[in-house]
Image (cartoon, rainbow, N blue to C red; front, side, top):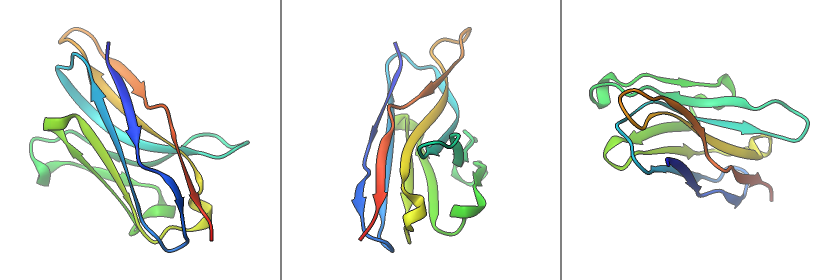
Length: 125
């Protein structure tokens, strides 16, 4: 069984930084797209950033929500089945529960879309 485990988050002051990590464990053949989403009470979950698999670092595609461009950076370590989200220049409006998302192949014939358990990031002084 494949599962995603998130770490990082917590309370951070405006203008500060935090790094989120999400590691996949279990039987995995490959992982395609990885991403981070966030959700606040009463709102739909929204995409923050995503990254394709690519054949090498230079060929991986990344996509960011307009609200985080220039402040957040998504990256991945395929050897560790891990995706990261470096969050800089944080604003109070970045406060949310952050969820990682991965498109995983446990076997060559199966495909799963998995979510992490969510980690709360609170930006406040």
